[in-house]
Length: 272
Image (tube, rainbow, N blue to C red; front, side, top):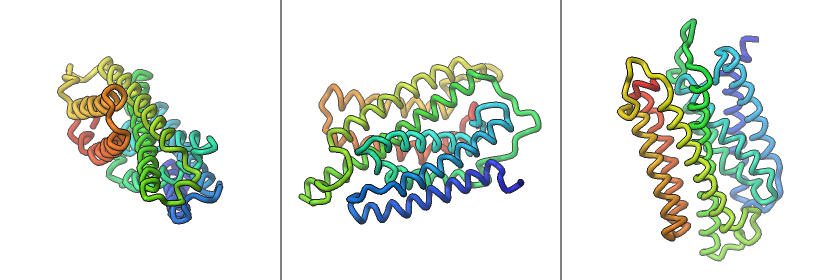
């Protein structure tokens, strides 16, 4: 049926992410005191439809679906959603879905803009597995950074409750602030490694007319992100940057990533 195109499947996934976001508000108001699986299953259903949408698009192209801004954004969201579901299976990380759902919903609404998904030509040109590896590692790095930002938000919320001596922090199902700090740090480290691999693979890709790799706007932007996350990791692990400052930095860095991703794509000769 025409209704079940890849874009309509993704639209249904975004609607489920929106439902999970609304339900998350109630969980927040109740202080996460209930062991509730509803939010998890709403997010899981959204990720299942999201996976179907990406599969349909990939099969239609016979390649990894990361060939324009819409496809790249949906791949990023898919990686973030899948990682959130995996972490939520751990006993004290179930409510990470309540933090991930608003990110998936808001960015998903942005991705649905028609201008981000222009029609492919009759014979799209791809550079094979190396290109897919480059795109996949870069976007999975963004997903790891996004999940690290979610963990950082959870850390700040719980730290604030502890400072205000709120009973909610003691009764909450959230992990301890020490574990949240560790998870955020490890996710940033994983994202940094994936970003490094993606940048190296991108440098190995063939470029039209010998275009300069390190003069491209998107490559320069990615290099800036690489430096930002490297500085955050080194300062926190080796120079004693306080966990709160580290968490705030991770959130700001991911917000910067989301806000400037499309802009740099527009000005990139290699990626646009």
